[in-house]
Image 1 (cartoon, rainbow, N blue to C red):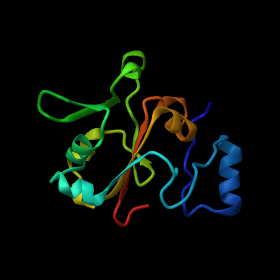
Image 2 (image 1 turned 90 degrees about the vertical axis):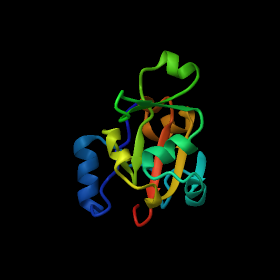
Image 3 (image 1 turned 180 degrees about the vertical axis):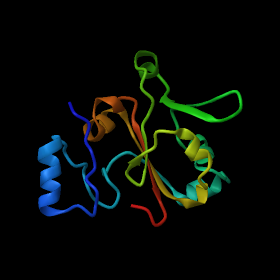
Length: 147
């Protein structure tokens, strides 16, 4: 199964079809909030934790996940607790406004107050939308003024 890839919003019509045909990609489900399932954490719940960074907000609100840090306290990985964390080596992918975060240290630099909503998809839901590399689940962060 191929991972789905988002088509830039500015690309429409023939250009988008050409991109799909040339690369063999499928667009992600669109809409204001993306997939309609998963656990939702609101801005009010995040504010109640008094987290200052997105990394802290995730640590304080996302259940059933382990947050790994280096010896200096920098974010290094997020993975699901339980059986899948034993059998799979993949971390939980994180998306901010539909853009995948590859370097988790960025989460420690972004303010938690910018988060409008966090949506956590389980492994089954995540693989439906994001492919087999999302077997541990996916964390979707939507920011204020973002996408």
